Length: 558
Image (tube, rainbow, N blue to C red; front, side, top):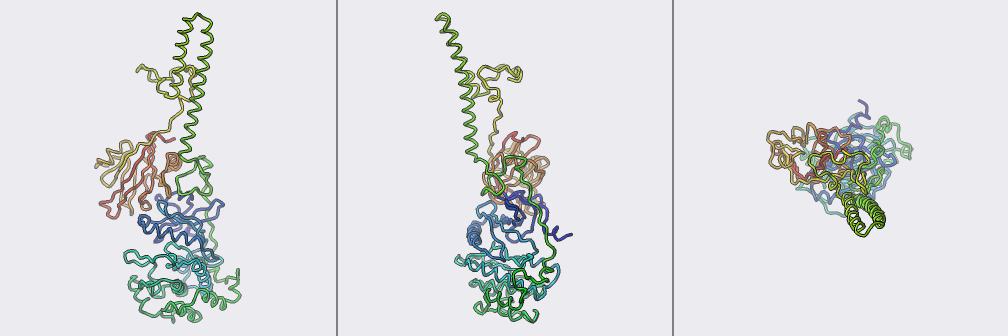
């Protein structure tokens, strides 16, 4: 398997096709905070989209903290950081986008080739220390610097993932006693719940570089509690490290934060020993061996607007590459204007007919003129009414079920507009709330109350709930699904667009949280539905369920 194949994994059934308007091209991986996908900006520049895990997204404290971190991280600009370019802490689920770095993580590089040579470790430490300078300059402490958060680009390392970083002027956060960070790369003060400062990141830099030099964590493996005990109470064994690097590691790994080197001192120390290799563009040849062959990034996913003129909306912001469609209020206003124009034209034609008839009858005697005027006035009102209420023009006889279709194409009533009376009307949504499905109770779009409220223990509903897979899923033999990521207030047109090519008869709910929206289509009936999740419980598979609000548009598929 090639390295590119390992990096870019195909999207799975549970992955969304779009996140906040960014069309996803591949999976990049998953971490403690969520899943990461490859996408592109409007100009075609690759970006990494991280979607927050549902259990974090459901935590109001996390959302507030995440929002603060986004504002702080937007300020960071540095040659050795992956710039944050877009994010939304209030989306369902929250997400962020950073520039994509074409290169393996330090973890992947060490697993693939083993410990790094001294020159490569020096180059690594200089680049990461310079990244920390840019981060700390904006009042941010990373708090979770580790090998998987360092990417190895061809021109040097990049520090990523400020998803757990906090602004230094913010309130220190612990969740039910749990410390933020990865045990094997914590500083002693962080492991013991003390004050976290910029020096904490320098200790993590020393541990990260030691992993690169040794091929394993400096404080050993094992349960996190045991590792944290060694970090707090034991001195690191520097004899395991290459001799030229030991003085620098001793400064970075000092137990007292005040005794540690600053990022600027680390940069200067490494540059003196690298010599000419420290100049821009002078990366050592061994660095190119570490990063491996150049990765070919997949091309952007084609814009669906080339086929369907109305792109997805309802996301948290209009996205580059998609024209902004009219808002629902504007679309309603347009339909009202069109109806008024049609009615005015029909009414005007009727009045003109009435005027001509009146002129002709004026030549006759007074009685006939009076009778004719009464008859004409009555005929002038009917067409105007029929244009506003098409059903009024239908035959009253129950035996004539074909209506106007039984007449010739030109056999319509004077003053009426065939196109106006035949214009299809948009189906109106039928609301059902709440609707619940679990292992014993399925759901039918044809009769949601029968299946979703009272339950169908025989499982005959179109839509079933299955927890055989982690996180549970919705399944159907006929209906197809697609989840709207980062969307609120999804419309019928949006569901039509995204369901147009959907072939997913099952949809995993691992990435779904309260507020998530799932479009559903029954190809047989043409019904389209929007399911908005209100409560999801999957911790105990035997008792798992999902409950939400359901809206159904009958015969709405095109």
